[in-house]
Length: 300
Ligand code: GDP
Image (cartoon, protein in one colour):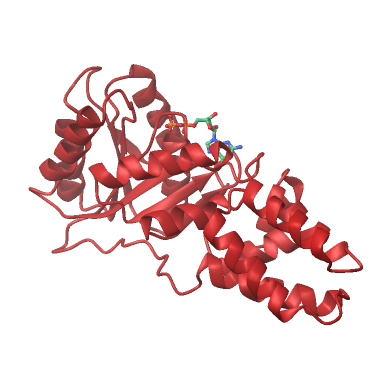
């Protein structure tokens, strides 16, 4: 939590800055609310959540327009936690069925941080004494499998790879097959994210999941979104939702120039919780997402 706070504070986070600005005002007048509303919208929070938040704050804080900052901060924190939604189940389903490994598919557009997330997640699981196997089902680019293997070596887990151009589903199948034979706890499958055509993507990801499920259920399909791409992340989220059953979101690069509010928008749009967040390129820069901690990080 301390690290999250530091990272969010150090980032150029528009939402965090907007909140600090509101709390620093002496008077809560029309101009203040207009500015605040504009800040929230430009921080990717979305129009619906912004309107709700501003309406509630105005209603509760309208005591002669004076900003009693203690009360403003309390109400703001409470309302923000509410819109980030502390009631969503953000745990990862890592219980393998019938003595088989838990299977996690990681999907998303190339460059969003999929491979890095798989590497970091493997690290977290290894630290919890779980045995892990990686499957390099992005067979389109040789560099992708190479990068995944490098992560595997770094965190001390094996990677199942195919030839460049091999069928992604067959590589994923072999990884899970080996996971079953070796009795590992979790198989993490990295996939390709070329958005050349929606049908192509649908066929490929659908097939990977179908083929794997011939031998073991896929417990999680995690969609990785780059938080710095803002509204574009939302567009990607809609496309992936249509092609595969997403069970959780991973928002990467929240340490960078991300605006923060996108967390709320994608969750609402997909009705699926943000489960993990990426806070850097390092091996330990992955954190479980949690509403109170995130709001504390934003508000300092
Ligand atoms: P993929 O193509 O989706 O597999 O994306 P990669 O895992 O190769 O990541 C693309 C780039 O984003 C790499 O340079 C990563 O180091 C970087 N990256 C991934 N996650 C994070 C993060 O949480 N924060 C930052 N700052 N960079 C990240």
